[in-house]
Length: 472
Length: 69
Image (cartoon, rainbow over all chains, first blue to last red):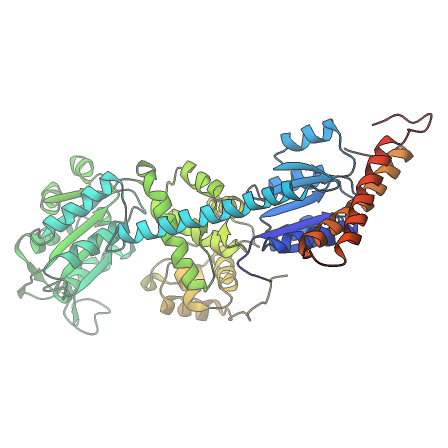
């Protein structure tokens, strides 16, 4: 069997017809699977993933129209051709109404059948060519990990190229999942500090009482638990870039000290009288309106103005839909490489579904949906059904036990095994199984480090499942 | 739901199915056989006869008491 060829599924209760269709389909380079009657074939559609189904209209258990309806529901991308030795106008009209590609009478007109199968073949080839073009365009429109050919994104890349060598503070705003950290990294990579450190602090993940110590360090014995002197991230990033993600979460008690560090490059470890000078470019990011928060007294206005010397706003994905095909192509390519699968992209119907979504979680959400769909898909081109399933899984709360869902995990520093909910345990267990026991892949899907995952596993006493092991 | 209940229609359906197989295979074999192949005239006979049989059953009178569906 040619794995790369399109798949033709033939369903008839007459074995001679099946052999005939198989012979004909193979001559056109189709992989042909024959099924004697419709019986349990619908349960196998998921595994077979045919590109085209040739189904007899009159069969004892399930008739062709019912098979047609079920396949259109299961996989809208699959073409269905009905064939019959007892044609009638009624059934022909019904078949077309239900979305059949054609309705053939027996004896089969091989010229017409060849035409239909060639149409399916050409459709797949055209799609694959388009997907290759999308993947190529995505590569060409990639800017340090951020992909975008929309006017807004091209303008953004130009700004980064022009300003990165000069600016010392940048504020990146935008909804969650719009790629703020990638833009921050691009600033670092394009600028003169690229040889030095790029450190990230997620302000929403640090305990309030530890913030000052995290940013500026502490002296041994300066507070309970300070058993050793610690260098803060400002000192550690000296000469490089410090990315303060979710800066809007910064406690008000730390804000004046951050202002001093940003404005004068002065930092003071907790418990020390000595002021140190550092040379750090600070890039802050937030999904909040810091100007409004300043006006409401929730964020220091002077710190906001200092951070926003250059303010970059990242548009939400719904405002740059033109980039969805490119982002999709790039994510599918990544998944294919990671899963060692021959995935070339998504079908036209799947792309339409992706275009229609609102993407409140933006690029992160799109990426998660594509990853889940790639895991679910058995075909080379991911279909609409897998995309919609992946979308449903992402939005369902709580997800069905049998399906994969993303999990919200707290950073390493906040891990407390006792406070874990059963749902979290279940999700980690499920993701591990989905990844076939591959912890690196599971950690990546969970959005945590591999080390973190190991700590979770230790605390939860979860063991690595054997590959192929299924939940009962 | 499409159904073929009258026995004549059922018979017609089954015969057409079998003739489709004969016609289909003979057509494929004719395409795969070189023009000088000695089996070619025989295959052509099979194919033509099956075609005529199809025409004949299309003309077959419907038994009394059975209406077409």
